Length: 281
Image (cartoon, rainbow, N blue to C red):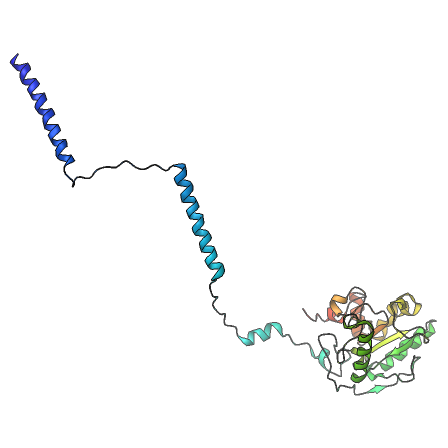
């Protein structure tokens, strides 16, 4: 009996001791209290996500209205010239060369006149037509050969001076406007006729006006097949306007010399000087 009473007292004493310890702990601020972790709810996640995208939006607005100033790039002028300014070979720039290039990008001086202008003594639509001496002999030979084969060629244009070019271009502009005129009429200084190496042909001396209808004539067909043999090429072929800058002119031929003309012909019938010499690439 006494032993049972002792055991009960011991249990009560231990319980009292534990209670006292808990009370002591509650009253002690130095002892850390483990807090329960907060859980993310769906609403809190959505709010955080919206806040994140709002920040991104504000940042993008800032850089839109206040873009960073790019750091200047130092460029060597010598390097620029080397890249964009590729000099043409001498055969295309020498004024005495039969392959002197003249187009919408390369012009002639206003005072340029070929050293030797001669009268070719071929059938023509005008009493006074002069040509560059470089082409005169081959021109005469070609016209005579065509006549032997039953084709009559009339020369309607040869050398045209700078001053005459001004008048021709202004007259054309007054008739059709500058945009349309520039398709077939070059500005003064940009005409191959100033070299005396460009020639316009017709088969009808009574109607020397240039027209694409010339393409259907026997004279045009003969030139297409034989002109290269005498040093001439069709200068402005069909569908090459994006290269030459001019529309199709079946009447307009350019003298480049027999060797070059044959080389161009061997590549393709409608190859231009720009393509053959890779000008502009």
